[in-house]
Image 1 (cartoon, rainbow, N blue to C red):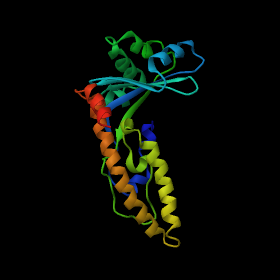
Image 2: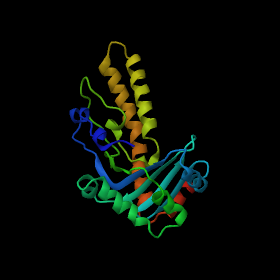
Image 3: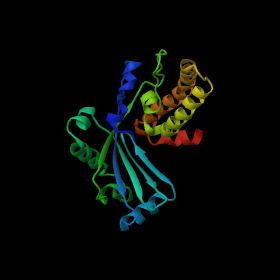
Image 4: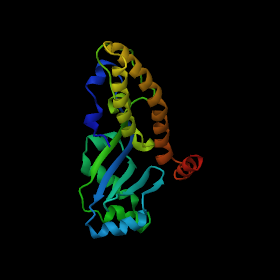
Length: 221
């Protein structure tokens, strides 16, 4: 998950006026270390991989790590002002307090965690963001295509960007601009479709049709 400060790339302003926009959803991050006795009970609910329990405007996404630790993101639709102005404590109280009617086994992911919550508002750039070639500068990773984590491809794209940039420069020796032009052409083509999926999935996971919209997503996949 990318901190809001890191998402606001300084280099991006050299190429485009586009700025990340709040998606309306924030994650409250909670963790249990493997040696916490309550982690085993949480792990039994999750199973061997990931648990996704979603409803309109909220959700619990928990992952059982290989080392036995538990990593949970509590998703909630929160006003941007609450997240950015009133601070983590106010945002956490509002988000975590909205699960009172949920099943006890799911609420335990919230109520039994002693670690300090971390609030992570989800920002995204326009899915089809592109820019005209500017000599001597380009972007990669979240600076180029910041998106929500609901496609699960942000880190993969960033690593591919790095490899693709190196490949383009190596294959255009002595002509950096030709290499950067080739890199950006491929960058725009591969990132836009995934960014559009990510944007659509924000609505699928937190919109009024959840959880059936998520069931349909995996059934179609």
